[in-house]
Image 1 (cartoon, helix red, strand yellow):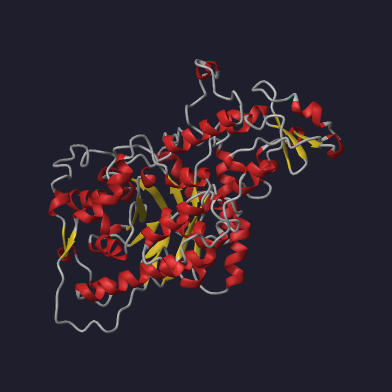
Image 2 (image 1 turned 180 degrees about the vertical axis):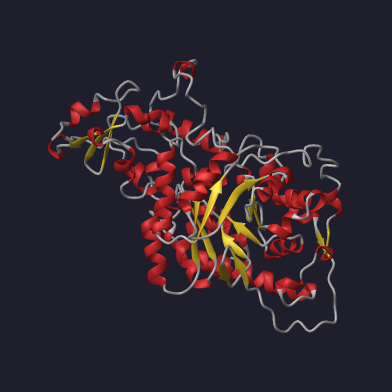
Length: 485
């Protein structure tokens, strides 16, 4: 066993060891590969990182990421004389479910967000609420929905309403789904299990993030235990190493995930300043000088990509081997399409499912909302809707918003942050409440609009003129771009 005083000496970039659940690991070579950055690991160099690690990593993560020789053995508990972990907001547990606001007083998704803010740790709130740079895309996502108005028809029998639909081969009760979002255990000890339970009980899809804080195995088991409905889709972040990406795809396939969502908008991670600021504040509060020195990036060599934990070389050609690896077990959907050109490219290459998204405003700032991309496709390449199921997310906070997207040709709408807030405040009960809220709003809006089935929705049922004025007037490359596969 290793002496705690010896472990404590390894607290620099040149030699960094951490303790997790009594086991010592040498993470020196992993510092710049860590998706969350090197500074968070360096803060725990030579210390116990268990309380920081457990809420955001499924069991077995560090063992799978590090070579066996980097597992140095157990720390001798008799040599630990005082708490070795930095005392920061990150190591504080999120307050358990049931926030200060009774759930009965939450009437909409905004109320659930307010309740979550009262119980989340600063780290949790910063991570969930942050977006890139000046938040222009994030705010645009939220505001664009209000720029579209309904054109309701009256004097129609709307007593019986059906919201059932086929989403990527799954017969869903509702035309919306739980969008991929990471690190749910920052908000609640059960984490993504709450989302799986909600999806199962309401029979809707749940897109599981590669960065889920609950393992894919545990989520698949949860769905089987519920024995109700719903299904799991796997949202893939493409790793730098092809072998690791193939392993992720095989794992999802073996566990019975029903669709593969390939994320195409993360060649690097966006600059999410609120989240970065919180990390910097924690480092200062802990008295750790963990910030990179100016010029360090240059010394890391040609292969280094700033903010690049995922593949920065991913292109259309790579999709071929991903399709081959996934096989015929279910549909593939490209997540992160933001222009009509790429929507048409995907369609021309034979992809039957596309997911319009700007990553919740967390990637490139100043990019258009998925609602504008939807209108752009309608204007320049409407044939995409005949060839593809089109999904959207970003800023949707009402069931009426879902209906607007469906009128314009979307198949379903994803909700991300709202479900993270719901589980943070109230656990599984919050997720169930959120789904019921959206469902009730959607059903009511359908009746008020004068429709009883999703198949009756048409573009003329909404007025888009305010947003139409903001859409591109021409796309010179649309007709000339050539498929690469």
